[in-house]
Length: 464
Ligand SMILES: *[C@@H]1O[C@H](CO)[C@@H](O)[C@H](O)[C@H]1NC(C)=O
Ligand SMILES: *[C@@H]1O[C@H](CO)[C@@H](O)[C@H](O)[C@H]1NC(C)=O
Ligand SMILES: *[C@@H]1O[C@H](CO)[C@@H](O)[C@H](O)[C@H]1NC(C)=O
Image (tube, rainbow, N blue to C red; front, side):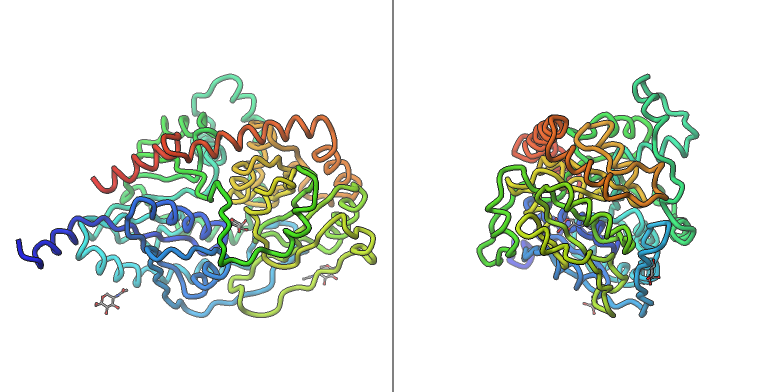
């Protein structure tokens, strides 16, 4: 064989992974972390996204892995309005123009796919379920397989599936009872959001070779099995995608908050953050601040407004804390006004609780790090994730459940919930269960662990 021939053979043996994330932080983050996981199998990984969101990803998610190739394409300019903190429905409607704009990736995607597929044995496209319109032409290329990434919990997916089938799924008595209490979809999405979601429906099952979940059998085995029974598609539960160990990158400067966190007693600090899509009203912020103060528990509070469609454009709302709040709290708490290293905070031994909106990215991070959750769902699948956490897994308690979504949460309620989670026997029990779950999740990612084996099997399948 000549050198050229052997190069040719090598080239043709390659399986290439092409990731197509949806451009909202929680979604983007999950597929980038799946990319990181897949590089451990020495597969070339390509990621396609818009120029704006590629920049967002690189500033926020420090993944300097040379075998991940980013392809950024400009999309038509889109309006990037401020989030509305006073809206009664908390879905981040301000992001919809950015979502719509990303649908223009269809043509560059097709071109990139055709370039990549020319020299590969197979191109494996992994796309967010909302990116169906961008990848719908995959069936025109022979050596391409597409896998849909479902970014919600298996529990939420199972509930949606059960509703779509009008409650006809066969379940055991215990689950039947539980399903009676599943939070309603009312107010989870705005009309615009429903319309957008409907517009992405391209019957992906016609070209899909399977579905990937950021779910773990040690957390949601029962629901993964139930979905598998109903769905004729191949299914892989590959979660958690987020790292399960905090590695100290020496080139990376440690955030100054750790100077404070290092000094706190084990499990004594509550971490408060509502992710990147929650905008809460000034009144609610005042109540939350007073509640945290009155609880007399240590806390780190990430106080940021929700993202705009383009996070690099325009002003960010200035949020005011109650008068004298920071002086009164003193050494008892930290308020962080910008991006915080969430996973590292959750993995720190001093952190003993997480007040969260229960977005799936954050929920998985909390459970991986064995931290119990005070659940305050805001929109989308979050009410269902909250139910999974508080009622199914018993690794958290509600700040307020979905039936009370229209009411202001008073400082008194916040004070009580924080004390229950951080300073009561009930809280200690929940913390113990959360820690045990975290251990099992981290073990599942070690060699021979249940998720690691499933990743092995996925990679073996796509490189067959
Ligand atoms: C998701 O996870 C990353 C770290 O893996 C974290 O930095 C980020 O805050 C999380 N994003 C959201 C939207 O919660
Ligand atoms: C929200 O309501 C407050 C009054 O409660 C008002 O001061 C503020 O301007 C409103 N914000 C927006 C963006 O409408
Ligand atoms: C595909 O390859 C051609 C020729 O190498 C190149 O000019 C073009 O920019 C590539 N397109 C994409 C979308 O990568």
